[in-house]
Each structure stands twice: as C-alpha cells, then as structure tokens.
Length: 331
Image (cartoon, rainbow, N blue to C red; front, top):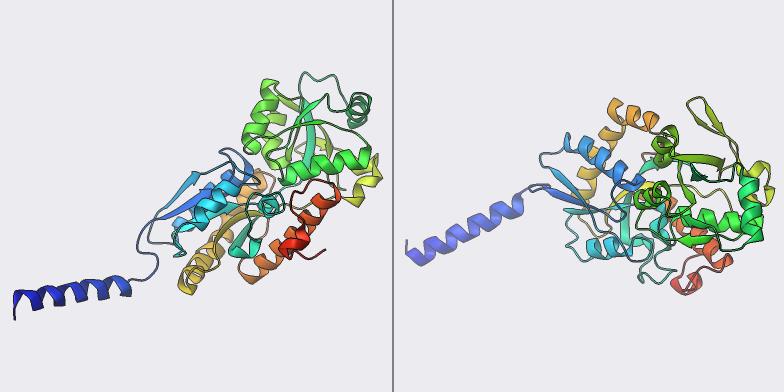
C-alpha cells in the first residue's frame, strides 16, 4: 500500500469515526441572555448542574446580556452552529425582542424547555416613606415620572408588569432599565431607585434581610413568604385585571434546527433532572412553581406568551414594531 493510499484510508477512518460519534461527544455551553444573579441565571445554573449528571459531558454556563429584551444573547446563540452544543438560557420576557426592534425573528426559532416561574411583586427600598401600594401610587400620580423604578430590562415581564400597574392605577413612574433582575435589585438596595418590580423568588432574600419592603403582589392571589403575607394589588385596583397577570416561563432552548438526536438527548436529561428531589427542593426553597414542559408543548406555551406580550405591549404603546407585521397573532 502506498503512503498516499494509507493516508487517504486513515483520513477516511477518522472522519467516519467522528461522524459516527453520538451526541454529545464534547462539552455544552448554555448562554444566559439575562444578567448574573437573576431568576433566569439562577434557574439555568441549577438545572444544568442536574442535567450534567445524566450526560457524559459538562455544561458551562455564562452570560451574554444587553440589547433589547435579551436580544444580544439570543443573536449570539442563533449565530452558532445549530448542533445542540450552544443553548440559550431564556425567559418569557425574550418573546418581546422582535416587537421592540431587538431582532426580526419570531420565537419559533427556538426549541424550548420550561423549568418554571415565580409571581411578580412590587417593593420599595427599606428607607422609602411609602408604606402601602396606595401611598406609592398617589405619590406617583401627584408627581408623574418622579419616582425611579427598576424592572429588569425594557420589554421584560417585570417591565410589562410595571407598565400594566401604571395603566391600571393611573400612575406614572420613572422606569430605569437594567441588564437583568440581579442588577435591578442591586440598584434598589443601593438606593439608585426607590421601586423594584421582579419576582418573589428573586426578591425573597432581600425581603427577609430587610433590604427592601414588599407592598403588593402583581397577581390576584396573596403572596406568602414564610410568616409574611403580601396583599394582592388587585384588591385595591381591580382594573389591573385588564392587563395582568402575566406568567413567567423560565428555562432554556436549543435552536429549532438542531438535530433530533440533540433534542431527544437533552429532553431525556431535562425530564430526569426535573423529576429529581434536588430540583423539587430547590424550587420549594426559592418560591418557584415547576413546569417541565419541553418540545411542542413548551413551544405552544411560548407562542401564547409571544402573542399575549406582543399585543399587550402594543396596547400599552410600548412597541416599535407592529406585531401584525411579524405575523404574531392576536391572543
């Protein structure tokens, strides 16, 4: 056998071996599109650690933040090969990126997995003079745009809840966007803003530590944080029902064009992780409701969220792109 023939045969064997390797044969990266310390970041780090136990490779988690409604991170992942080795850590808030001009893709570009979510509430800094939601609303009515409020990034579920609160109460706050719930809450603790709208799961440690004070849940039900009960904003402002509640759906996604083998393998690891006692205990300790939807079921859920959020934003006058031009149906 000539050297040239041997080299060709060796190359063919190597290529054949590589193509025959089953997914995953190298480490996976999850790119969280929101900031470190927020709900999406925390959930992804938790669920990836559990999923690693079911896979022969490691999963690294990092953050690519910024843009509109997490668009920088989504653009980054969408520019990677659709081979299942780069996942996007996402939340329901990402469905508004297109109608806010962050990018021009509908959410069906993704094959999503939903871990769960936690209800939003409105809180104030520990030093705030406002003791009740009514006190805060009246102050915001008296001096529109004078009270700084953080609610993660523009177009996030927290921002939509703040907008809906304004619509339902006739108040007006000075919205200050941040790159995620973590930075937004840090701004409240440091006194950069007086008001914070994020989830109960995200705020619970700060509330227990006396760093912020809860005023009202932005869902119809009373919130419970150990022995503390947080009243519903709907009790005093029933008009909120016209826009709320908006539901969280936090998790991750593969690109929809990823191979079936990648979807099936990640799906199996996700299902086992979600059934683990570790995940159940984590959710209970951190005030999250678990979902476990993935694939077609999760895609249907995100399609509903995209429709609801996009048209809610349009009704609130907060879109730069008409959802109809993106073929997003009305809810």
